[in-house]
Length: 220
Image 1: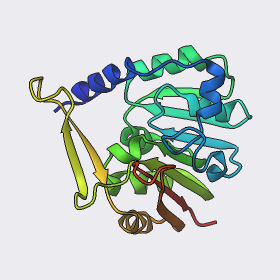
Image 2: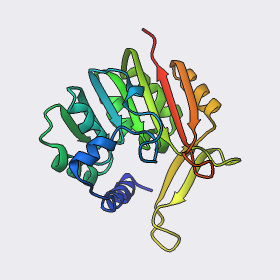
Image 3: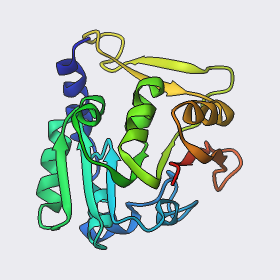
Image 4: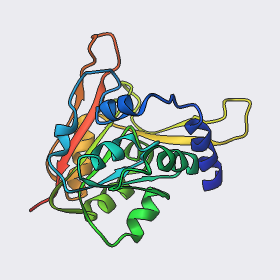
């Protein structure tokens, strides 16, 4: 599979996203769980002056942070996501959007941010043994990484693959990395993070899927 194929997949996914009113998008942008008005919110990020989103999608979270004065940058592989982000949020002065692969972006970047975060984004879709050390180097001393995505299916751990075009389409696939919280904590520790916690936030209904959330800090 080539990067072009994967980019095409995310471009097509971008075209299926709902388009709520801007006010609603900003209101809900910094919720980590997939359920309305449930679970932790922007407090997990602390009070950063700068923030980097890994897999920013349409850029709602970047815009929400930037609208409070945070210098916020969102990186996404999809050109359609970045086009939509610039169209929706280009008038927010402190918001910036970059089309790039997060591994390549982090490898080339020479700067650091107070916070890096992934809301059902690149941390889920990138090999953590490659990604986490790069993220660690791009976070300022005393900063933090925050991420959220679906928890692992019981008994199915590690890299997970799915055919992005269905079983009759062109052979394009997407990988996701699924681990239990204690395994994520070990991966974060190995990458140089400390004061870390990874947990599954329960859904509002016990029968629904919860949310895996991780918070890890860099040394001061």
